[in-house]
Length: 357
Image (cartoon, rainbow, N blue to C red; front, side):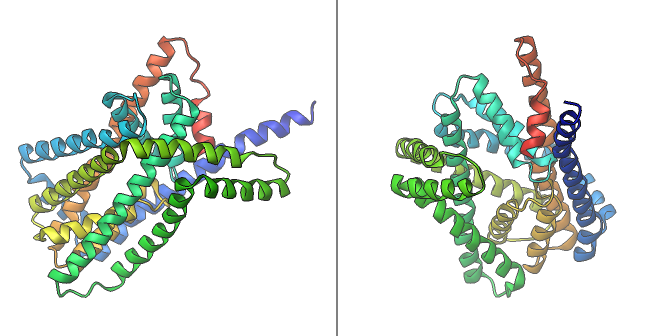
């Protein structure tokens, strides 16, 4: 016993140490990209950006917040379609709290899913229902991002003589990889036979590693659940992600217009497509630094005013990324307080989030 106890203690601490190191590394990378790489690429100092943003009227900033909130409400159409009986209020809570956790941890999407799973279980949903919800919403989200790329880049080619260069080759490469992975996922979800075969292959591979699993049954059940949801709610799912993407486009365009970036609607659409693809990068919390640098570079290549572009991009990200952290964090705190009042144990939630991250 005296030997086993220290081993268990060390093992329980290791996930936390790894999470902290990833967190520190991601934060340092994001800070380096925002503080040094972004001014170097754009030729615009952060002090100049502050001057542009501080000159904006309060009413304009309030209008941007209204656009942001409206987009989040539109997004609940997709979430409630993927999880029947989920209310729009609870869908908004899931969206904000999951994003807040994902935005403060590198690769924090898994931790956000873990938090949302705890939430929906307290609301009476089953594990299978949440698995279906998670898969369907993520597939539709990625589909929307790919559609943006497919629509935006041909429009740019028709309306602009600017050479797209390596930025767009990189975006197209990323889109192609994502499309390939998504295609495999859709094929598995569309066919119980494909789901079963994939499950059997995974079971055999894991058995060779000494793990006894039944992923064949799990994937077939997941496929059946996703198929039922998609057949019943594909229109609401598509409408929700479409309206949400449109709201983000309006918000990005408004930010760039207010800061004097001087870009056309087509360029805004291209910027949105690039930004949506770059959010898939998980090297930093919420893609911080990577998204700003990539989006700024594309808009500058397409003729945007440097000071206006950098100010508009940072303003947009401050709303869609930065603001989600305190708002979503308040939602997490309110949920934990409600659970404690109900007498439910919540002490192990932090450990679960660290393990997921």
